[in-house]
Length: 299
Figure 1 (spheres, helix red, strand yellow):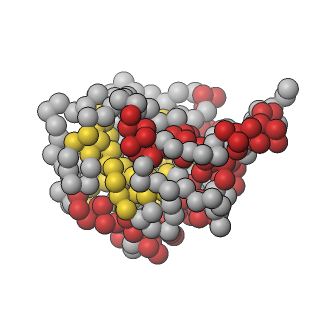
Figure 2 (cartoon, helix red, strand yellow):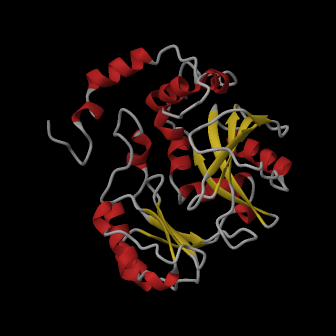
Figure 3 (cartoon, helix red, strand yellow):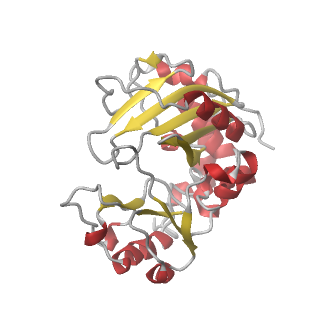
């Protein structure tokens, strides 16, 4: 059957939804509970979390605007990007999707280039001298035409987020590169697990920890850092902030950065990996689900 607005028929089908609701009715593991939440939690706060522009107001209200990255522009029309006063380094993202970004900074690989706009959800790090506002606007225009996720029966939330483009400051670590991305798994207002991703555009590593700093022998795909990296200097403060940001819901992953002593907000994710997070050993799928008691009904 034909797609409608880019959404396949099965993601609109009431029968498919009914089957998925039945299959997820008694979730135990983390992945099962993410899928349960995706199908049932249609609260406005979930939409706010997914919206990269609206979530800024939530963060400012809950922990303070000092933790937000600077926003240079938020536009509805990609052509408005042609008039932006571009800084020397910046990040361009769609507000209604995940995993797409144009990162522009002097620390990018010298041979990195933007792909043609037709490739859609672009994720690329390039130097200022090899990119033009016109190229960015062309890719952004494509983003504004696309619906991220798998439609109403799965990551429905992105269909309710206004389609806009946001330009934010580039966050640089001590070496001038992209800092570690620290992700806090917060269940019912308490952090139980922490994921640290390093080397996003180079040799990527990924490590998992408990809040007390104990390293978890778990792989989510990328290799562990070797030697093990030091914990961020503001580890405990980041946990506190993550718990405040997540106390209004049953589960959310809170992404933060520790940039030269400055804690900066990244994003809030209600449905990590769309319910397909990898766990090796597989037993951690159950362990990550254990602190999470999903409600019978979201209100």
